[in-house]
Amino acid sequence: MNIALMAHDNKKDLMVQFCTAYAGILSKHTICATNITGKMVAEATGLPIHLFLARVHGGAEQIGARIAYNEIDLVLFFCDPKANTKDVDAIARLCDQHSIPFASNVATAEVLVQG
Image 1 (cartoon, one colour):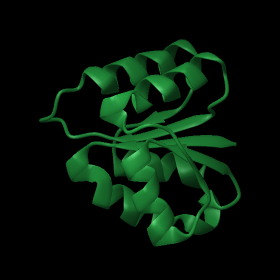
Image 2: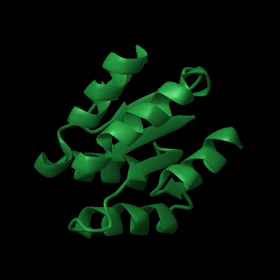
Image 3: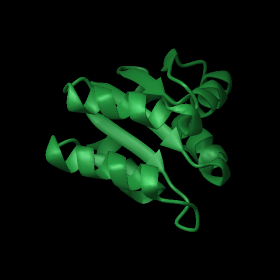
Image 4: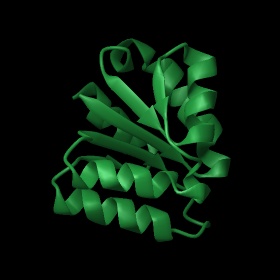
């Protein structure tokens, strides 16, 4: 399964903690991520991660294109509800259009990863 990871700035540490906790499961899949999130997760877990641009520099669009081309099976995007949610809305909409499971918080991510 191809899993995409994204996180707003103040949720990056939570993403690292999540990926550390579920490294055993995630290691069995292909992981891609926006640049900063991916680097943080890779350093903490040792997981191989394909890096796209930083989210604010077009990484969200790169992952969006992969979703549109049916190359992503699951998206974990830990978002800050106080931040600009334009990128979250666009990714969520693409996931809905292409029937891709989408988690915007750790509780939903746990259900999806354990399933």
